[in-house]
Image 1 (tube, rainbow, N blue to C red):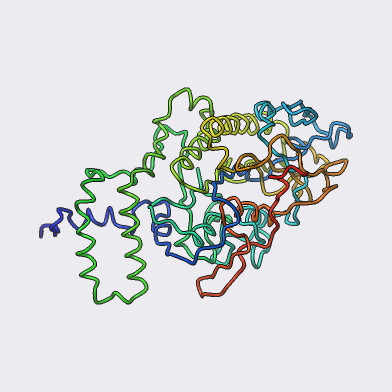
Image 2: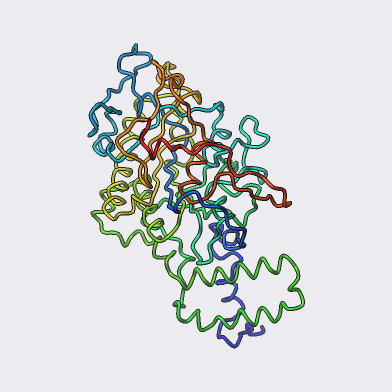
Length: 451
């Protein structure tokens, strides 16, 4: 058997393939690091970061941020409101930690749209745009609108090896069916966010391919001459688009690996035990801790899925599941996240959002609540959000907004504004056709406190 061909750099062909762009991570890296320069978008704000805490399946607004204690029992439900640290503002008794930090939060009680279907609504909330060609349970496709990190990466691509977005801890999917709104859609896979596929609370958690087995950053830099050798071999094909794409991938893979920032961000086991306990030793808490580490390392958009998919879809056992399984870990992790961001000064530059894809019916059905997109709540903090305020009101039973409604389009415009991107920026699909990134209105009320 012939010996493996070894280049002058000391790397054999197999080793180069292990550190090359193709198949480097298994978390979508080749697509991410293939992003190319685009015309810079007009910035509407100083660029900040976003952590989206997504409550997949949609929590009941009536049992979390918009309780109706004066209504009949079939609407009011089992939970009682508790006072927060802001006089006159009350939220669910099962969110005591967030109640104690209400001065950092702005709660919007008049979110609304029309899609009562999980997949279509998820796309709308995670992209700020209605799904093109939407129909009941339409799964993800490359005709979808781009998620926020993809829009950012298209208009302001990175050159430092850091991804524009990371989704964790799992894909939102049911069986083999991927839910829409999680990738770059029509912008193409080169703008996809990284997708982590492990629970960060597991003892075995790690993104092993981010570590250089047998090589440190200095060694890899010394071996960069291999790239020049590959380029010479590729000289006759230099004009081909695919070749240019691979060159981009190689260059950015090297940049990422030599920086070390990405690998260090994922080393959640380096956090003190007391910090991990404060967030909660569960998937919710450790995902939010990892989100803080990623933003701290320079990742501008992190989406934390609070569940694999539809965890908050409480058609049955609504109160039992919220009380025992869902609200306590959310409350613990989100409170710790706010505390850490505030203590380090990062809250000034990081927008934290907590919401699902819609709300739930005012009237209890059996022991659960069904889908309700006509009115729901969302909580915001940081990045200039004026805390301690309630924005908007729902009607007496929480069925419809009684004041100005805010749509997922407006949510998207606000996210892009915080990221320093003009929401009305023009982007182009894979065929070069132009499209306006977002058509919503920035929710200025979050920042000026005129709610």
